[in-house]
Image 1 (tube, rainbow, N blue to C red):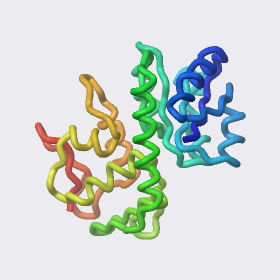
Image 2 (tube, rainbow, N blue to C red):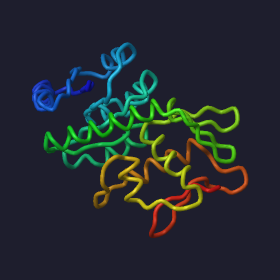
Image 3 (spheres, helix red, strand yellow):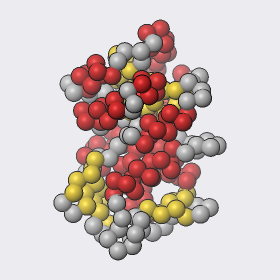
Length: 224
């Protein structure tokens, strides 16, 4: 498994790479986002790990630039107390975040789950259609009429889950487990941010208003 680690603290980057190596995860380390943009234009990775401090310092623009060169899952690494910055990162295209300190085995398990599901999505040939909405998981794209909508891997998984259940609401714990590939934790807003991003990208249903609706006490449903 190949990971791009974007971390300006050289000692922290080295220590994390050493932790991942016994888990059969090879980390290529870069210390700035400009170098990362150049590398992702020419090399493919299974996951990108990005220090949220670098994201904050670039006013969150570096993640947008990274998305132009790669649709690789992006996981933010954050010290405790920076969860609000991670939420902003999710809003501009990150797939998830993990707060320090974390156990090496837990991080490796998260990365392997993301790689496995992203590989499944890339190889997934079926096209999902619902009214005017079409999802192409293998391309991480949705289409509405002639409009093409680029999706992050997490958004793609969530939309596929919602499309396969149509009007039936999916509980939050299912969307976390199958869409974000982890369990929900207290005060975690990640799912809500991803759903908000999807609403913005997809726009309203031609006749029924908001495509994705909240169902109090249950979760979310895609209107059909």
